[in-house]
Length: 253
Image (cartoon, rainbow, N blue to C red; front, top):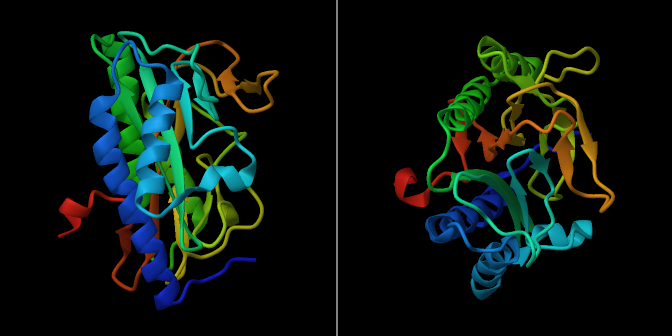
């Protein structure tokens, strides 16, 4: 069931999202070659908890405050002292915050050092997919309009679009209805309504769409071992269109 949020709930979710944006502003410039993914996870965790929040992934039993995925890891990379970030890596950092019961969710990717042009292009196109998906978030449109917007841009560049995972409702729980696929689909296709809070979340691959989960039961990788990029923002649907709640608070002024 899709839960439309009231103004008090939206205000609570907005505060959580702004804290998450502030966390990324702090953490992203610190990500560099030589750090372990556990080092990055500690930066995220310490910032969240020092500002009164709790890492939302803890309530999902994930072993970290941040899902940190590198290159062909699509999502849910487990932070590890042994996983060292290298020059040329594409590192995606997926974090959620529970602030007074309100959940935010966002993902940013970092290009570390001297990145190959083809990896930089994948990153740029994934950002384009995110922007197109968000732009389709208008009252009266359907979820499929978001899906088609993301998919059409990825396919224009001959990239793969992950089918096994997708965007979703968010705000009071980490994962809520509706699902927001990044590809054309059949079946339930709700209209977009004011008060919906959605996580728009393209996962785009340089190769094919096929993925698998590693033996740790969390980390998802591309089967062809080609790189993947991942971005995500939490938005709320308004009468005028949408508000990107996880946008940099300085940009929202």
